[in-house]
Length: 243
Image (tube, rainbow, N blue to C red):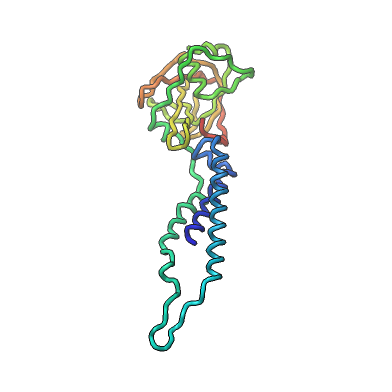
């Protein structure tokens, strides 16, 4: 019965995390259907197991009693009881149900090397809009490998969290996931122009233009693009914090 209850709670925790978008702190959004299916299967299997155990318990024979000559049979089923320590397995499940961890932030960004922009020879024109919203990875690729040609003359809007750079000045960052938070790596953008005094881990939206300045991440020697800030504002953490 213990295993069935734990399985029921674990399946419920997965469903709760998926429905409330808490799962986005662990894995990429594309895995939502698989998590829903896994949670439903776990809950269904647990309910069936509990129902079977209860039904088997109702049909079990009464334990034998002493016949007065010391030949009674102890059929109370003590040998089949599950160890109470098994209930300790509920602790991590309850933690998943009750605790929502923060997304990876400036500490993780400072410990890992920046994601290198993907090299490409030609970039498509930016979409319409002023400013045009661009992801940090797309901006870094265009700035470093295209020398900002596709960014020329455009006001660009970037969104990320503040992380201290090697010189102590703020940088804009966002964690990039391949699959889940365990493999998260940061994409970092250096900031020039208007100063930003937001604290580390604060989410900001910056508007500005391409900067020809290029730095180097001391963690892994990757090239780091820079952005010339015209204006900025502090915002709430987005629903999907990862790139």
